Image (cartoon, one colour):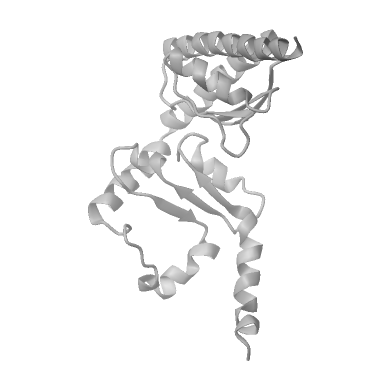
Length: 216
């Protein structure tokens, strides 16, 4: 039997599962439990957590998979090999993080922060609607869309000068990755929104100024 024919079922399995694979930068940013349970392909969920699982304090990442996807580990656990995984201390840290992000009070904060900032961003969009044209949001993981091929790059620059770090999407420079922490107090949220409004206004002025100069 040819190699391609023998690999056929494996390839098919990978293709079927691929739509359910997701990478999450912050495990608690969207409420990872709800996020995984709400996947479009039931029983075939694979989420990869990096910085979110360690709080940026311990070098570990993990894969959170459904029983269907992880079943082979029960049959041949030693078949999972990695140059980094399996550190006993790291696993303890990761398990504690998973316990923390499932606490009701933490999940409540995710909903509060995402709702408060989402509303504030929509109000800013009402002010600069000709430039700030869209908000993609899942919890506190957001993408801010701008009406310029590199609009998010201009906004990123102005945010940095106003003390806020948020990077543009390399896949689509119109979109700014906006991922605030899940434990922000209301006063911090208010200050953040003030700085974002200022930065977007300045970026809009800079972009519109360039357009005017080119027209002249």
